Length: 182
Image (cartoon, rainbow, N blue to C red; front, side, top):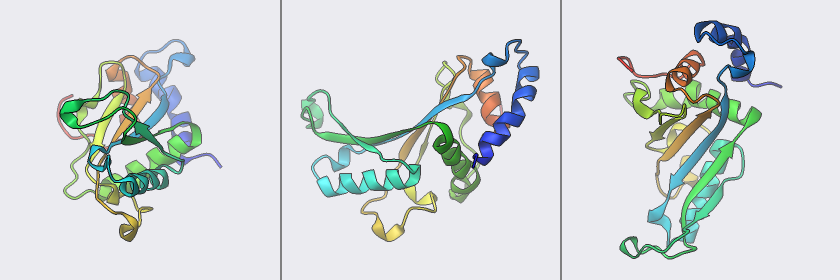
């Protein structure tokens, strides 16, 4: 079964092509992948906590998350090469659309005093980054099973190189941006 957001995107394609004045339908912006990452330097020495973070992110994403190891030693941060420093998962295809749909329609509205995601999260290459302060906004996370509340960074990678096109794509797909100027 196709994800709801995928069907919405397929219906939006002609509108996007006309609005963005794109001649070739292959150049219509699309979402390529979504990366969910947690910098878990606070859990470097606690293996059980790192496993718990990995399991929580895997539950949220619906796909196995991997533990990221430090590539270099940094004495100032007491990090040695090979130590676990974070958790990351990359979503593509149907899982990506299903996650984005849950994020937009269920998780973000559960944020206390939510006014929208910031408009300034674009990186100049058509990708959008924003952070979530706690993992409890996702309904699939069991409150009793988590050991520590942590945030996460969500990166939405699009096929366009232009921030305005990416903004239009995400806005039309239902991303709740804050009111005001871009």
